[in-house]
Image 1 (cartoon, one colour):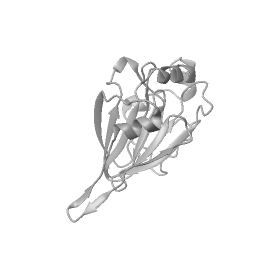
Image 2: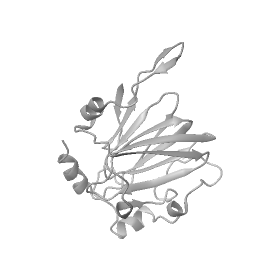
Image 3: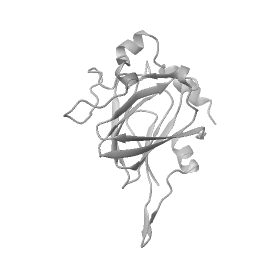
Length: 198
């Protein structure tokens, strides 16, 4: 498995080795030791989520309150998505910046997203199935969002028709509004919490 750190601290891409034969192919989709070596601590699996979306759907930008936050290991099991991570950690050197990478069912690459970062994706094919391994279970009172069409973020969604958003995502505050409301995690709190992970 090939590991690539991305420009935003706390984001790594994992590209597996595909082993084809006349029956199909085999791969290691997730390997705890490889992830731990890359991120510097273990990844505790508390929940796995699957979402199925049609083309043009945007889900996010979602994040969880830190501590404990929610780290994610995201993969596209069918179709192709544009996966976007937004640094929403107040005080981070890359605050407000985003990182975009395509995940698809051919390359089978995955993205690890650390606690305190915002996450979103757009479905680029007729239908997509996305899986998330999560370090913490879903907790509605700790879950928040930033509007994915916030002009200040200028996220690289495909041009054309307006993305399909859930009512909750469409009502989410901008990054500036979320900051003013005290919803965003701080870089200091995130790094302090991650330092406690073994």
